[in-house]
Image 1 (cartoon, one colour):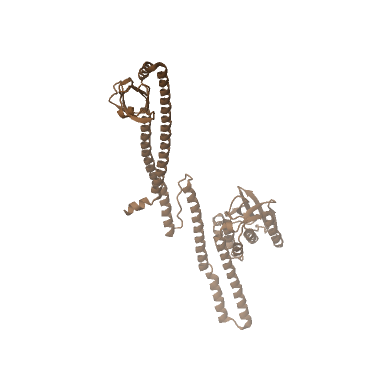
Image 2: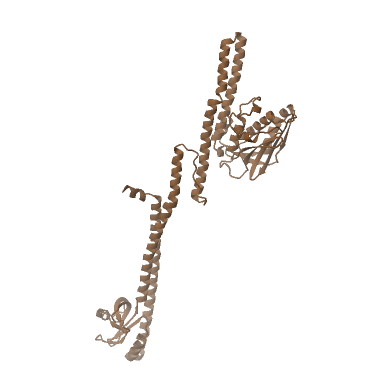
Length: 483
């Protein structure tokens, strides 16, 4: 009983029952309408035919008398059609016609009304077969009674055909409902069960599982694509949370240990106010560095957890690049290098202007540190263009570049290559660039130009629908990302 109750609650059963009910009601209404309309039309034709026959025979009786009437009925009775005739005298004796037997009461009620009767036809070995007909009976002068009618065999046959058709259609509806149930239960319910099984696996901790795609691009495939994108986002956020935790646990352990060692050393060895002051200043500097690391980690976490639609707006990239170039050009010239820009006027993108500014600043800072050629020349180039329906921003230098095997690794938190350990930094700048690029639906890509390194990110063009919340940056999200 429990299994039957569960079965009746399934979508497959309800859909099959619904289809069966809809098809049955529609089919019954259609067949009833056809049957009723056909029966009405055929009945009207019978009435018209009978009335016309009666009028003609009455005129013959008036003009030619009884003899002409009997001759006419005899002649018409020999035709094998659906017309019926019977002429009897005052005693009920048949004078002419093609009806062998008829209930006596029918002839006695000669009121001219139309009625349905059962009769037996005369001749052609059919006298033992009872039929149905629509007839009118009139009483003529001299006590004669005249019956004129039409056999209903064809009409009844058509009605039987409709009834058989209805029964056959109901059988087909049942079969269609069964096929629908099989289709829904085997295919649709199978896909739903797969989604449920995958969801249970994910809830048990396997965030790498994804919904399978059938490849026919139906509504389940579209749902699976959306859910997979959501799962990738959730996995990314969870991984980011784990990374932050691991980074804090491992990468901050060294500076904290160094800070504690310095304090212990000062307490043990420092003498006088000057010694303590120097130790406190060094400790304060180390604390500021730790705060910068924490703030960078928190900002990356906020960027990775932010919904893109809440922070996007339309930005003029040519003006943005011009502002950054104006800010950094004097600094780069002081370092003995030069800064070039190549962004077409009117280039726009859907992005967070503050974050893109931070990305360009980080990439320029990296180029300043590591982008010199072997002869000491420094050239930094900012460029932007539309490519493949996206806006691409590129920062290029003329330094030694990054080995291909390390290009993915340097995007992770606290990763610094051996060549860069002599320079100040936390190893979080490129991690922030990577997070901002992903927030904008793109990626951070490196390419060794030989010589030089180009770092590029891609953004959504204005009007391509990226982010859903374009141009409606929430103040709360803006303040969160700005901290």
